[in-house]
Amino acid sequence: MALLALCLAGFVIQLDVTIVNVALPTIQHELDATTGALEWIISGYALGLAALIPLMGALGDRLGHRPVLLAGMVVFGLCSAGAALASSPSALIGARVGQGVGGAAILALTLAVLTDTYPPARRGHAIGWWAAMGGVGFGAGPIVGGLLISSFGWSTIFWVNLPIVVFTVGLILRAVPRAAAASDPRPLDVPGVVLASLGLAGVTFGLITTSEVPWKPVPTLIPLIFGALVLAAFVQWQRRASEPLVSRAVRGNTAFISACAIYFLSYLAFSGTLYYVTLMFQNLFGWSALRTGLSWLLMNAPFLVAAQMAGKLSQHFTPRAIVTTGCTAGALGVAALSTLTPTTPFAVAAAGYLVAGVGFGLLVPGITNVATRDVAGPVAGAASAVLNSARQLGTAVGLALVGAIGAAVTQHSWDASPYGQTQMSSGPVAAGNLHGVPPQMRAAASNAFETGYHVALGICIASLLLAVWLSAHAFKPRTAPIGATDAKEPIL
Image (cartoon, rainbow, N blue to C red; front, side):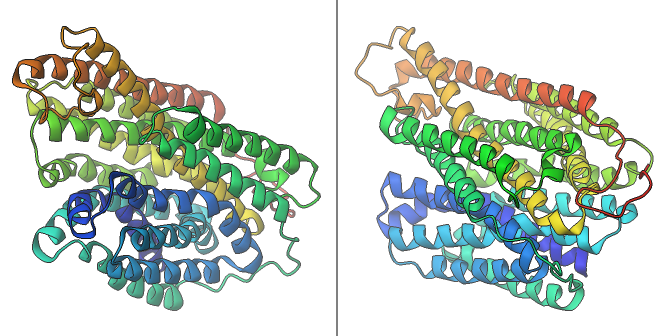
């Protein structure tokens, strides 16, 4: 029951990452929302998640992982109800930010509670289930959202969270052990929390706004530069602070830092790939959102199976072998998807989905197992927060950077076409939207988008290949748990 509770917590957070996308046209019509408001209905959730993960991890280490996780579930549930009842775009955006605040506690501490609950020998199996359920939630979002909206209206995509939250809270209260907070807790590193939160918020805000006004100095570059400088100040502060937010034991562990880097690179590739493949299917293939979401089952099913296998494989193979194999398979799957054109048989996309699903199903629990296997209770919350911050930033960078480069290549290709000097806006072409393109221009617009699509997925492939190199060179046999002070023998 404890494992089910932690899996459901991860499931509902990932579900809300994607379930809202299919509701945007309906929300726009019923709430009279502008394009900018629609973007912030999606982005407010991501901003709340990214900015507060470090704080929630630190609070969990000091107040106890279980109570802070419970508080996050309650906040997430209340704000889900607020989103369902919202009567204006601003109220919905505020509720989505609140969901992100609760989600930050859940993301930061589910792994810490899992570490508290399961001994190392059983942890790989538990992480496999946790990763699989999170992946299922991410992939199920468009499908569940499409079914609910077509039958009951847009507010049901938020109401559906409440029974899951209530059931999960009940399971946590009943089944998750009361892991006591540290008997002599370290002081909260307030400057570290402030610097980390401001830096992550600045970088995330800058990346989010690239979808509205791509790479213009004031709205995008200034927040990005500000966030980067604040994060650099955070790193310097962590080196000098007597009780840093991220302990020296965590920062000094090569396997943990490498796991964070691979998590960042893999989610950059994952989010960028899904973004562009979705545009290809819906705009060039002419698929509905529901049909596109259903096609993701071809990736979700092998993801679920492979994530379960990863827990068992960890008993026979090294983390290096599992993660390297997963990253390699992910790169091969994305490579297959990168060849898509409107005339490509769907069998090619199906093969890419299946191989990528197996790859990500292996690498996500494999990376998580490496990152948590040596983490002792006193620093588990901070370590989990750092790991999930890497994933959240990877997702944001994948959507923004890969999207911006793909759009720039599409723009360049369109400008070089015979119609590039016309008065027609290139915005729809950059997204592959051919509905407003005159018939005589559609072939050129399709070719321009395909060029940007191939370059964008090429970046995703390169990101996964870099992750292959990192996993092959960085992971070594573990020694002693991070944060433990009484380990006398190596852990083999």
